[in-house]
Length: 254
Image (cartoon, rainbow, N blue to C red; front, side, top):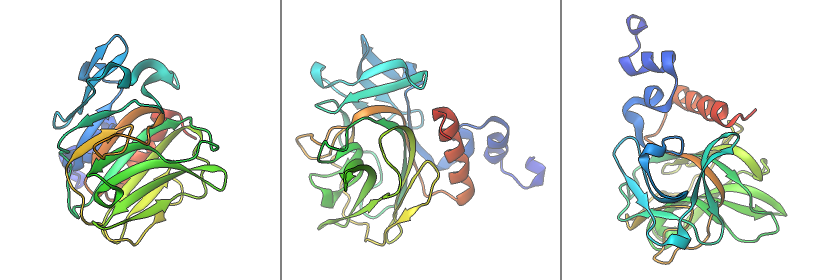
């Protein structure tokens, strides 16, 4: 295969699958609920969760704010359950690119908040003390239906990119969130990509959170499971297609 013009990691991707092999150095962070060896647990409460690439660790010291690791809740596979009330994990400062540097966030999740539950609930946030300074992957209802969204900061305000086709209820879902200046996008379950043209700028590095917003006081708590969070460099169409297939296979998504 290498002789056909593939690099070593591309050849490995063809043979083994898996994000490491598919993406090579483009994979910046990978928090995997199936790797319980990368978690510190107090019973089933998640005290910390360490990524597989650079050792970035999100954690929670307060007992009542810890999400739960569950061995079979994600379609028979492991996942981390956030209760939608006060559960979150964080790392400060955020190790992820800031300013206008582009990256992608891939979230393999379920989403169990009812559409009647107003307000946004965030699976991922990285940045500062407001939406103008942070990148966010979230659920918010619109016209009585749960929708997946991202918010893209410009340092003064933020633009929203929202999938108004997919009912973002239940799941599992594989959500691709592209943060790029003038070319941000959101794609759910490999469907139509929704694009935005807003400026990407002003992302600070105050903190990284899973399950809540990034301001000093956490809010907008996620309700549902997180099976995996991946952060990548901007991907090619071929890489994105491979990672979508991996997420759909793992989540048994049609």
